Image 1 (cartoon, rainbow, N blue to C red):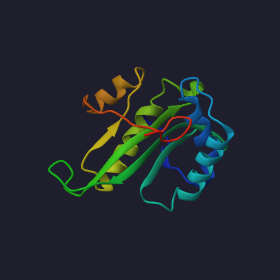
Image 2: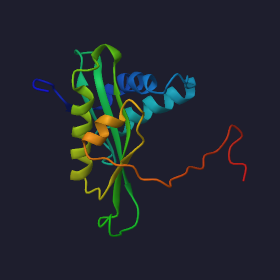
Image 3: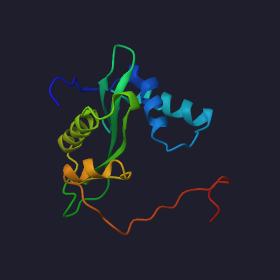
Image 4: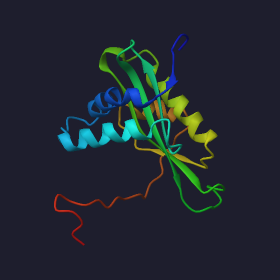
Length: 158
């Protein structure tokens, strides 16, 4: 969309990235510890850690309209990962007051370009039902068979 100002996020955006990240948690209420950890990690790493990338569209000088956060991971080299690097888009979020204006497409396009420029041989994401049409239009397709193992409330039990 013409006129959108997409820029890399910096440490000064940590509070707003947290606000937008919480907004896409689908009603889940993260703990204060989770919020503090996320915010502090963004402050520490943005602009300093080349494996953490984020792009934003400012709403004004104090708030963000939209963001996309991605991570560069290092695995092993293979046919689809000749560099051994792959990317994951962890968050795409747009403030409800700024939706339907092309912000999500703009920040997603920016994060994809940055992940490709970082050498990622493939990029993945977990799509919500609402976001899936955007991601399909950008070339993403389904990749079945993945499962996750995560610790429960008592930590790792096995």
